[in-house]
Structures are given as C-alpha cells and as structure tokens.
Image 1 (tube, rainbow, N blue to C red):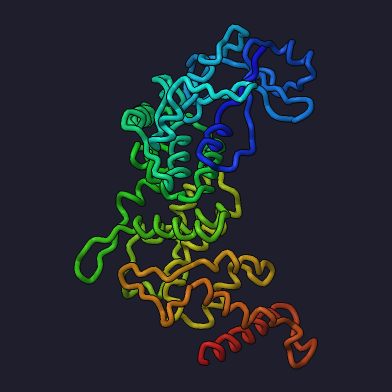
Image 2: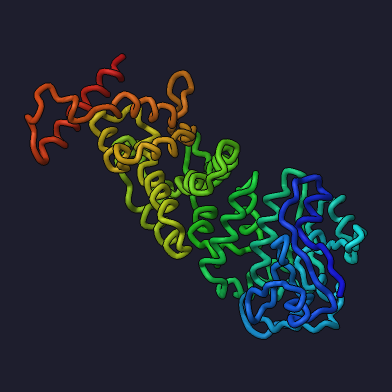
Length: 407
C-alpha cells in the first residue's frame, strides 16, 4: 500500500499560497485493509476513509467510466491494481494532478508544474469532456487565478464548449450549480467566473437570465452611443469584492443591474419607487438555483429599488422612510450595513452627487438620523394606540429626515 498527497494542496503550495486542506490517494489497498488499520469509512458506493488520528480524507485510487449523463453518470473501479497514473489521469487539470509521495518527492506525470509556470489551465485528457461539472470548475479556477495571469488553453476551452453544446449541463442539479457558483463568487475576481461561462456558452443552459442580460441589455446616452450595462455590472462585482467576502452581497450588487432589462425612459426614472418587472425576471433565476433566502431578499431589494436609490437626492423623505420600512431596518439594522458599499453609477443620466459621497454612506447617515425614534420619542406617553403608533413613528422619522436634509 502506498499513500500520496494529491491535488489542490500541492498546487497552492507551489504557487506560494497558504495550503491547509490535504487530500490523499491510497494505491494498492482495499476497503477491508483500510478498516483493519482503524480508518473510518464514509460512503458505501464511494469508499473514502477518515484517518484515525488526523481525521483527513483518504480515497482509494480509482478509475471512471462514463455510463450515463451528468456528473454522476459514472462507473467506478477501486481495484488495488489501479495505479497512481490511472487515478491522476481522470482528474480535470494538469495543475490539479500533481502528487507527492511519503518521502516528499513530487510526482508530476502530466507537466502540471510547467503549466503552473506558464500560467495555463489545461485539461489532462479527452475524458475531461465526460464530466459537465468541470466547466464550472475551470471557470472557478480561472476566476481564482486570473490575477496571476492564468488563462485557459485553447483546446481546453474548445472541450468546454463541446460539453455545453451537448446539453450535459442540463443534468447538473441546482444545488451543485449553486455550490460551484458560491465558490466562484468567493474568489478575488468573481466576475471572471461569469465571463468564462459566457465564452463557452454555459450561461445559455445554467443562467439563461444572465445570458440574456449580457447579450441584450444596453442603454443609449445623449450622443446616441450604445453603452453595455454588463460592463458596469462586472466593474461593480469586481469593486465590491475588494470590500467584502460575503457572497450574498457580491452577487446582489451584480444582479442589481437587471433593473435595466426593461426599458424605462429618462423622465420616468426619478418617478420609479419599486420596479417589479426586472425583479420577476430575477426571481426565476434565484428560485431555480435554490439560492438562500438571504441572497434572494437582498437581490430583489437592490434590483427593484435600483432606480429609486440612484436618484435618491431627488426623492422625498416620505419615500425614503417607506424604503426603510419595506426592508425592515428597524428590526434588522444590519441590513443597512449590507447597503453601505452602494455607489452612484454614472450610467447614462446618472450623476454622482456633490462631494462624490457613496450612496451607501448616504443611506447609513439617513438611517442614523432616524434610527432612535421610538415610542419613547412621543411627547405624551400612551397617547397613541394600535396603528396610530406606527403612523406617529412614521411622521416623526420623516420630520427628522427632512430637517437633516435641509441642513
């Protein structure tokens, strides 16, 4: 029995990244032998074992044979005769197929170290195209490593397109797509994840709403030039990722630009409080992906109120308090913190207000002025009952906000 350290741990260490989680491959063993050595088996059809001391995962070397559709349509062979090379060749990219033996010797059978040096994401063999999940994985790696200059090899990108055009992506479960997308959103340049999926036609099958948005969402400025909203949405996703690692916030700030899918005239923008049409379009995407309620709630708010927030300096104090009421900041003040990164976007008729203050900071300031208004603010205690209490709170908050805005 021989044990090898494989995969991401070695890749990250060679790149100089912090490497924590370690994966091991066991060659020449069987489930029975692993159990005899006190390893704990997890899974019946897919024998992975937990080390009795370190609690790290040890997988038996295996081969795969395509037997159906999707990422789960495979037959596995865990014979003790399976070699290390046979196990490594089934992996996706050369940079993920580098191994290390128990003496610390690097075993690189597919030139993964050279591809690390050349900054190339390259598939190992044509069996790459058998697993549709690899399209998402490569997009995720491209996003994670793009700041180092990594690019996808031309033949690898061609195989990714073949996978997409075969319709195999349709067999991926929403949970698996969402899980990979969360990983893609958690890296330093998450916008690259969607750009790669667009290049290989994956958006058509997995995120048709985003694909429509990228291909069809434009506005016209005063010089009759067509401006792509996707440019601003990607810029915003890149900008926001420098301030927060929260994937719910990152995705919501990107999806807020869905508000431009349905045309609204320049003259109506300032008179729009909540636009439900793009929210309905967005809802179909997030519901299908089974995104968490937190992601849905924030995305719907930023998208539906996008035009209102972009023109907030022209909006009445009454509507601003209504906005706070709808997103329920009184019971959940942390929701204001989720808005603090919002900006004024110079798209078409949008202009930054004086002093170039961030929209999010302005909203925080407004909330700070009115957040302490409560029943204790009433001049006469017990003067209001039932719905009259809510109305009086509303009146006092509007009054305070108006006074502050005048100053």
